[in-house]
Image (cartoon, rainbow, N blue to C red; front, side, top):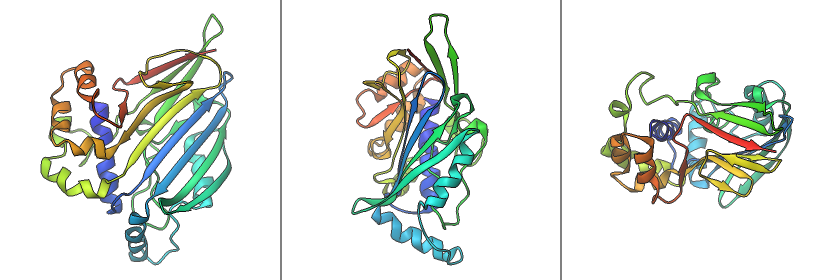
Length: 266
């Protein structure tokens, strides 16, 4: 439950930071081989509705050339993901649905990989850079088992709350008025992270599995905010099991509530 509430708060922070409506869709898919190497496929998309306001912010920040996700940004992002990560290629997206980029990276050792859960700030817009603090990022540990299987452990970080780090979830949960104010800014926003082992999947602690793909988190922010009582009910849940029951019938929300997720594969 605490992990989910922190995801909600970081989405709210992002909305305030860029002050745009329908601001972003950000997905990450990690494909992992048994030797620990693999690829990262990311898509970052800003809707057309957001771009006009983002351009205004860019001009207020000094008139820099505005490009929400340039190839140079994509190349430089490799250095923030850990040792052994290399930029491979990217393709610009410019459609009626939005503007952004599909990006591919490779990595040599998933144990060195460190992934941000939220999109980087758009290029040319004066907002704080994405955190590279290891405690705010998804981390991985891959080990070989006695039976020859590979076991991947994924640590889900505790994201910072609005207003600073040490307050309890109850004191920092968004109020009904805050949700009503920020809801238009977050319309259409989506965050997702998934892992796809190249070998046959044996088991995983995540309940969200499609074929070989294991979802760590995937939610439309609209689904969390459309129900005015959802966040309060989650806040009141005493155990992860209670929170899972509350989320069971919420469309578009897949969040692992434990601090660690495991995937075993051949």
